[in-house]
Length: 137
Image (cartoon, rainbow, N blue to C red; front, side, top):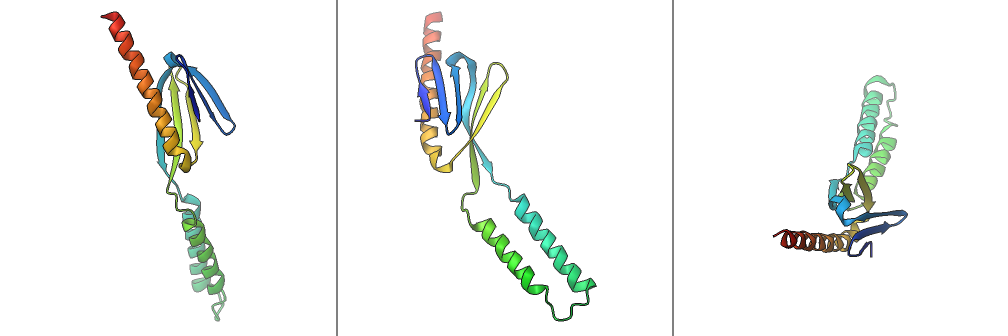
């Protein structure tokens, strides 16, 4: 269990991250899905391409010795880019009444279990709101 829900508190523990809030302190609790960035791989690809064009145009290497290292570098970049099939990163985000935001990166394999626990929290919060409304009326 990543969340421990009591009648008035929410405790979260994931890896080394631990926090605790009262139900009244949490403004928003949810999952954030963020597309993975491949900036490093794309930048390296552009740099290798520029270096290969530089050797092709401005060097006296007639035997094309730069082609094999360029192809090896492209192969390594392609392996790095497509080795991991996960295209998204997932985060649990908590915003509280004090304008603080807690953001914890989670494993994609843990996302369904954490999503169910967040749904449980939202159901309990909804029940609390209904009880408060019934007490007012």
